[in-house]
Image (tube, rainbow, N blue to C red):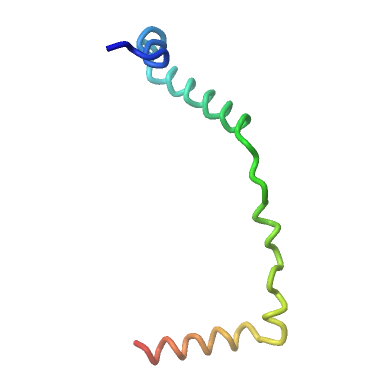
Length: 75
C-alpha cells in the first residue's frame, strides 16, 4: 500500500520533533490556514439594531416581570 505524500512528510520530518516543536508547527499551520481561508460574506454586526422597532414603547422591566409571572404559573 503506497503512503501518501502527507503521511510521508509526517513520518520523515515531523514525527521525530519534540512535542513542543510539533505544537509550534500546528500553530503556524493554523495561522496560515486562517489567513488563506475565504472571509465570511457577512459580519454578525450587520444584525445590530435589527428589529428594534418591535420593542418601541415596551418597558424592559415590565416585560421581564410578566415573563417571570408566566413562568411561575407553569412551575
